[in-house]
Image (cartoon, rainbow, N blue to C red):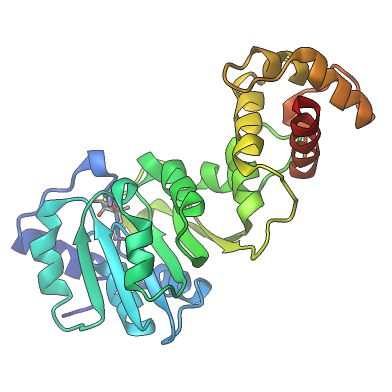
Length: 288
Ligand code: SAM
């Protein structure tokens, strides 16, 4: 099969199968070999690695990954792409295509099938579900060493920013709890077919063996973070006391803020990951 990483060969496959791209699935196929090579290189894929690709499309990046990796498992939601993938992947015996929604994928079954070895996740993500996919991957029990993905530039900024910027939020804190984020490349719209109307960036998230902060209860830490950013304009004490389901009173939050030497008017958007971890651990103690 010819290299699909260019306009001519991609158009030919689309014509051959009379495939109509679906906007609802975020279908913007890569047609630039330089960017494809850069992504695989940034993901540091070797012949020892098992790769999980999300949304293979017609198999463009899958070709590059199949050449570089030991094996590739590619999860594609669109049934219409399966016959195309069977064709474009026919010369590779190290590629498994699963036709399913990545948000419904049983990650523990995937891990089991891979003999418990960690995956490297590599993808040109469908932008409409970037955050749920990243969160599902991190929160799953699946062993993974890194996630190298094309995302909307704005989302890449949110992943790596800190307190005091407008982009800082629950996604920044979640990503930075699990991984070290690094920008790999800015990608112009001309590298896709069709061209997306947003800017794109490749980001690599290298998973920490151990999170950089010690939280006694991860679920509570993330519930606190979400509640703080849901009520961004309120002080932390008011925001958390108003959040249903947390079981935290305004008085408890104020007591902990005093212990931390912080003003009672402080807002969650100024909190670092470490401060959220301290807050959550203190609140758990106060609750007991
Ligand atoms: N990897 C191809 C490339 O780079 O040319 C296609 C990338 S395209 C941006 C996103 C792909 O994700 C599409 O093939 C789309 O059908 C697929 N997709 C969208 N939603 C999905 C989901 N929930 N689960 C799995 N695949 C999905």
